Amino acid sequence: MEFEDIIFSRRSVRSFLERDISSDILEKILETGRLAPSAQNKQCWRFIVIRDEGMRKKIAFKSGFISKINFFIKNAPVIIVACANPSRSVNVNNQNYYLVDTAIAFQQMMLTAWNFGIGSCWLAAFNEKKVKEILQIPDKIRVVAISPFGYPKEKSSLYDKAVSTFAQSKKRQPLEKMVCYDKWNL
Ligand SMILES: Cc1cc2nc3c(=O)[nH]c(=O)nc-3n(C[C@H](O)[C@H](O)[C@H](O)COP(=O)(O)O)c2cc1C
Image 1 (cartoon, protein in one colour):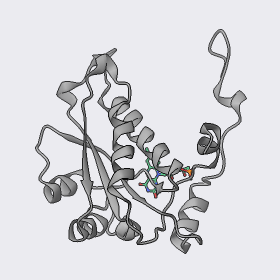
Image 2 (image 1 turned 60 degrees about the horizontal axis):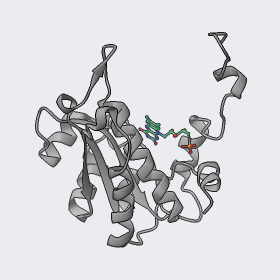
Image 3 (image 1 turned 45 degrees about the vertical axis):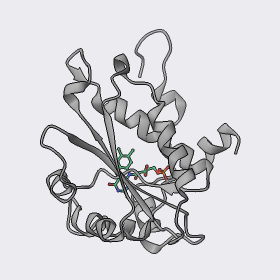
Image 4 (image 1 turned 180 degrees about the vertical axis):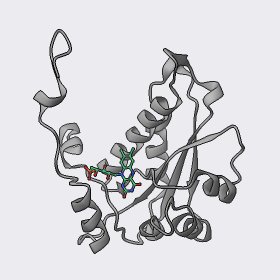
């Protein structure tokens, strides 16, 4: 795909075929996370790749911020949990850049996946304590995001449609609402 097509066509995917992702493609996805920029090049991100079916189901059904809200990731052949070590990251203006660094790397991976026809969906609605318990993540590590990775079903599920409608996923604010020139004027 042309780079522009990747950006313009990308969407969050919440219904997946059970088709597996080859290790070659998965490695390429991970590699583009590895190459991401980070504050002072600290690379504080850490990724847990979950392929084991039992573990995937545990995350799908037991990691939810509210009950089983993340059930829809159960069919995705790969789930990646994006973590970070905040003590390895940089603090500037009282902002710890571990979230920024990890988000950039994870988004690079999601866009690479889309280029291979693989969908993903950034999840924030998880219970960090439960995720850490299930995956035995040390206390000092933060869980930044979770995403399923898998080939999209041709027809989106009702759940996918409902969430996209609720979030008005196709809507974006116009540029003039978010961009000003020379001084703050928004
Ligand atoms: C930081 C962040 C957190 C999100 N959390 C969730 C989530 O917990 N569950 C979910 O289904 N979608 C989640 N999303 C996906 C958004 O709903 C989606 O990106 C937005 O509606 C725009 O739709 P699009 O990605 O299809 O363009 C999240 C996205 C971001 C960037």
